Length: 220
Image (cartoon, helix red, strand yellow):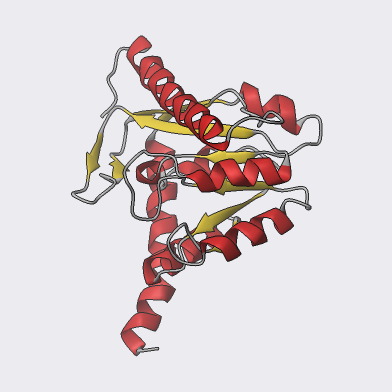
């Protein structure tokens, strides 16, 4: 590995942790987590799903017993894996395009432990906000409920990336909203279940944005 790459891998995650922490301190934030809290209080675990563009701040909205996140096996994924590691989360490397089958098998193995599993079902390269089949397969194989998690902010910048990655500004109003759990029903068609997850994530984000509007601000 080149020196520049080692330097980047060493410094960028620390910088990201500092930026995330500083932003969170300035935000007027709400966390609406009654759905997973009812599951966690029973000693059960979930599969958390959130859109790739909302990844940056998600660690600040998590209140569960511990989680491992599916992260791309790419070079950029290494940066993300190290950054979330500094926030106390584990990483499972792979994606739907690189190491997908191995990553799915590893997540099924990890589901034996009392931790939550988390992933961005439209990552790592899109299409934007479109659920792929991997999360539905994971839910079928583990029996765990799928819980959508959305982040919305009143002020922020969207980058010109495939996912329009969101960087919230300081002093913004923000909300983390967990949606209703979705469980695969025996005999349910895989595509029907995937569509149900899609609809649940879309609705949960809409409700997060409506929450901000109810407090007099609009989501970016």
